Length: 152
Image (cartoon, rainbow, N blue to C red; front, side, top):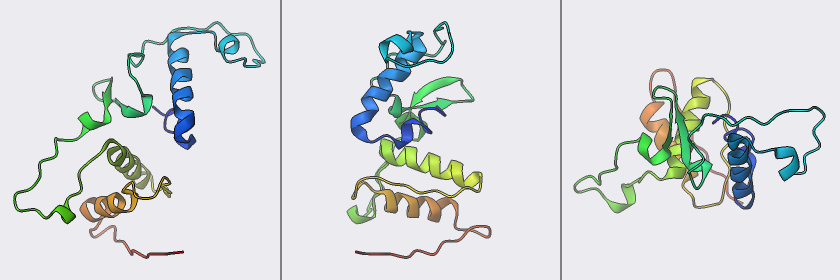
């Protein structure tokens, strides 16, 4: 998971399927220097890893559950969303795989007292989800927030 969300996180969408395949080939124990024309400075013997991730269609859709020692789809890490009775449509923030991943990483970085910069296409809910996460979990005696808006 650390490789996916460190090296793989910086890749834009068109490159992610290639990275997905690279990781699966690495897990299977394929000879990466031959199949990817890598110039290796040392000899190595590829070894398959005991990881059950080879059947997934997108490695970015899965996270490692360190308590159960299994890979889970991000959508399985949160309770099923139920629309509140009488709730206004404009007040609904329905969890998506992207918002769940972003909130997880945001919480992880906050817990490590690290700075966070979320990037991505306009209109994907980054600002709404960050503000919601901060207001729910980090608006207390320890944390507060000051929201500013910039427009170009």
